Amino acid sequence: MKSADIRRKFLEFFKARGHREVPSAPLVPADDPTLLFTNAGMVQFKRVFQGLERRDYTRATTCQKCVRAGGKHNDLEQVGHTARHHTFFEMLGNFSSATTSSRRPSRTHGSG
Image (cartoon, rainbow, N blue to C red):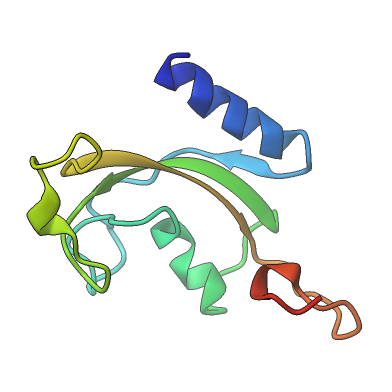
């Protein structure tokens, strides 16, 4: 299977479940002075998760272009030594900014 097919199947899976497909954000974030490069799929949603911005959707799926630039889980030294470590890559993701009821625990945090 080609990477384009995997990418499309991933995005279609989440779109079929109510997620909005959001295009990849720029590799250099325009409105975030704390980042030199987009290094994760959630970068374009950072202000949403911080409560500083609202969008007209609460669930999204993306194929975000990213640059491996170091950080908390720094494996930059592995670039070029293995077949899976590259400086440029695409990160598939699905995100939810919806608030959940306190009576219904989030399963993504292991409570439920």
